Length: 537
Image 1 (spheres, rainbow, N blue to C red):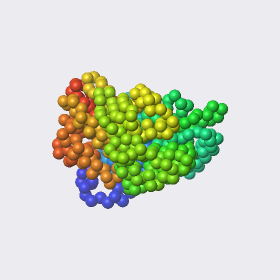
Image 2 (cartoon, one colour):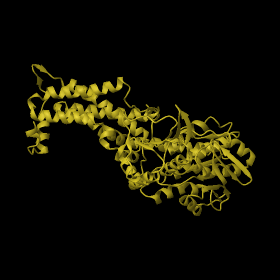
Image 3 (cartoon, rainbow, N blue to C red):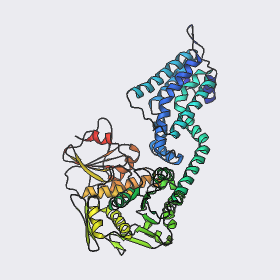
């Protein structure tokens, strides 16, 4: 076998061998092409569902999936390690014993099918949420698989490769469905736009930024809770998500229209915020911060700034734009506004400034004007987010005392720089949507805490493009004197973090030791809750 594999056999010879191996017979029993095709389809189900689940998380966007796979590694994410290894062993054995091809085809497909069944039975299989789109795409991919299995049934050896080709099947299904999906999306967004136009007196607050969007949205929702408001729910900030939400909420409010609409606006490429603005028609716009998050998708920092500027440029002359003057990229957007601009800051001339800022045991406190604000929200980097919410509330004619009172009752959303104590460990949970800025803020916050043992648990950051390695090296340098242990979920960015830190880090495995009681555990990035629980004492 090894002589054949390493004797310089040309790839076309290997392919010719595979194409000339019929299903044939095993002993005296004919191997049914239907049986082999059925096994191939069952064996393909697990990698197909896994990829569909991952792609759905990335909002069925090819650009976001590409960036994720580039960061995580294509093979491991799409088909894992075991399946390619099984197929490689099959090829090696088949090339050494071609006369027993049918036996090895059936055995290999049965083994791969067994892996799929085991994952399903043990509930280890990732499955997409069965929306119409997910059902359609997975169904189309299965049809592609069935056609491939039918055409390859005369060459049973080829069917072994079907489970590791599910990226091709699902991508083909995506491309086939794309024109229909595009048309349906356009019609849906047009319906949402027409419905929004039926509420001419509605005040719409649009909020965008690399980080802080959700925090400002939730702060405003808290401050304005006694007014008649509608606020986009968690994870709804794309043009399609907002359009669907508008159609659902406003269609039942025609006789009792809300006064205020708070819309979080996210984007991954130029033009998407402009499209959102055409749908919701904001009169007040808030830009929280412009950093490096998703720069890998935008292509450049300037493209990211131009995209955030789309909200500023969409605000009419009788509206108002609110900007974070502490962030240079954000402050520059004032030049593009057609409406009055309101700046907030913690360290310079601005329309709304914070003084005497401090981190307390329960959150942050500061003075703005003649009013003292105490907010149950950790991290002094969040002061500008609170200032933006205060400035918008003032523009809506709320009293300072009422704003301060409502903010004192604020509850941070889960997984957004929230602090809790569990099993004797203080946990900073910032796993909703981390960025370089929020990562640095988490390190700075941890440094100020009195805990003796401090541990960082992180997945690293993604979608940073060419800045990926440099930023992780910089974060490693910042963490040098803060954390006693650093645990990465993935080795890719951990390598550069370790380089900057100058000390060894840990890569999370089943053997990773739990943290000590009375420790501080800082969780940043996409860290699943079961992973956090696994490292607690």
